[in-house]
Length: 141
Image 1 (cartoon, rainbow, N blue to C red):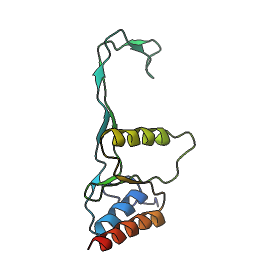
Image 2 (image 1 turned 60 degrees about the vertical axis):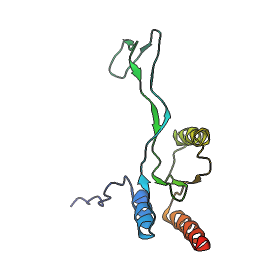
Image 3 (image 1 turned 135 degrees about the vertical axis):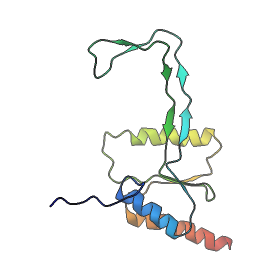
Image 4 (image 1 turned 90 degrees about the horizontal axis):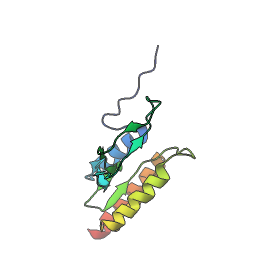
């Protein structure tokens, strides 16, 4: 009998599920995968040809809109000025480190460098984040 995949709801993996449920349980409001536009889309003004996986020839894409570059961190807690990007195992050739650096620079350019950033890779580290947030909340009461 085939094993059924655990129902994660909107979440993409177990770590996101755990983080989201733990934030909810502790009363934290958050946006899940809020989209940030890192770079606006544009039209390249000159001739532009590129190859595609399905074509052996170059394709003329002159005048076609170049899509924006976006980034969607897993959890954004605006009231707490916190962004959480859950990452389990990251392969050595993964693009995440580069994308994350670009996102951090975007935050600085957007006057959001006061947001605290967390990249937990397991449930224990998610629990550490919750402890930090809860300790801060107690100090301000």
